[in-house]
Image (tube, rainbow over all chains, first blue to last red; front, side, top):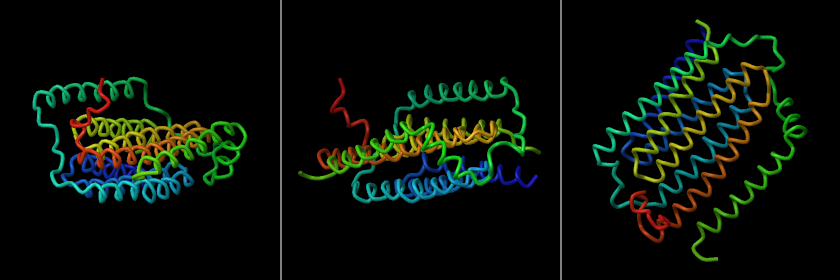
Length: 166
Length: 101
């Protein structure tokens, strides 16, 4: 029961902040709503027995990526803010298409049946940092190294792009 | 009232749709990038819900990779936005037709 209450509170906060992110007039407000959204998602990860992912979510998303966004929003000092798209016909068609997509998604989830709740005594321990580390360094060693190369390339690329002249 | 994986899938689908609506309706490139982050978060919720359902740690490993790609995408995307803004003084995506065929 407590889990259900916590889930519904988290879900309402996630969807509410998500809606605010895409509707907020000011870009700075949008970024701040994004932080709140990421923190609620981290709470959801804790409920799903993924404490390591929750910490990574707070540190990388809420601490790193969002600060990057804030820096860029502050640097890009807009005299005339870009407006939302003002073509009503296009928005109407888009709304119908989106509603159809959501309907198909939900219908597929309902049609494929309701999952049984996960068994408590499974192979996944609540404190599973060791399991993640073992999987990363044995079965997924090559993707792990490729990910590190990707981060290096992204770092160099961002520096080259943002620097005025080399 | 038991919360199953289906609940998490419905939440994830709704969050993903919010991200798509943001990408389609907003004209500010920074907000479009933020909507893409929302969609990546929806994918992560799905990964971790299935990791919990199947009692398998691989879902969490792939969620880590998704976060890595999201960080790289944010860094390079914001670098491109800064470079573009320096040249054209705009972040409106309708005025970014430079590389359009």
